[in-house]
Image (cartoon, rainbow, N blue to C red; front, side, top):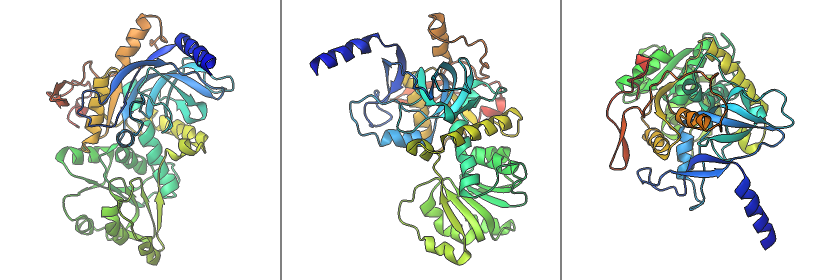
Length: 407
């Protein structure tokens, strides 16, 4: 055993290394070591996998939950699910991708994450990135796009095609978040009338820009607002906020034979029997189940391919609203803090461009000449550190001025 350990140590010493940002504990995000930077072994692709050089990633609420639930204190863990990247190596059995292809995907929940220079991924879960969007804009889209598609298709049993649910009504609870921002747009593509909740002036404006026909203020009586607008019942409801607190309201508002879907856990049991009288259906939606159970992996790739077409055509727009630059502990921690605050509108992205540039200058990366240049200016969006937390001191100077105010 000692000889084997020695040989493994020697072998490990000569393996290619890569930069990564991760955690060794689940303490407060305000802690200086909430995230740390390390040089770790670069993964090698299996026959059915791709090795991808990560160009940008985004942070989702599930990333924050995964970090909060991390228990292996002292063991370095890399998080991150959303990826836009460039294929760096191809497994022997992979036929549909080649070195240099620009791709996007959602990784597996229990595998090493995307906050690293490279990641391996099963090729079935990957699609070519939309050509007309820059890396930052693409990085915001994988997980929320697949989730929104799953809500409509698996949760509400609707065909995700143009005018596939024309004339039907959809109530979206939490329309301004990452999933809601895509779901509203996709539902409008299906021809639906979309009613969505929001709270602040900025989030209401954002939801309207996504295409919502009616914006409801969740601080006030939602049922009364719907009734006043002429909606006594709706065809479908997507709960992206709190299944428990909204349960009774949803039961009252859903029409007979209607469909409810939720992506949010219940905090106490709810009575499914209350839906029986209306013959209404309830579905859980959790897009990461594919990777967790290694099932229907190719469906994810197919959904991302369809979404890439819609993004290229401008039918769906990217939901990125805030960007940090550089694969650093500071950038990742700041992005996690933004999302953990539960007030983020759209998506928060970390652009790895500074790291890619440095790697290319050292001859260690793929040429980035074919990459779409980001429209976002350098610097961490005027974010400074104060008392261990990221503090915004000014608006980011984005070329798209409409995006600068949506924080």
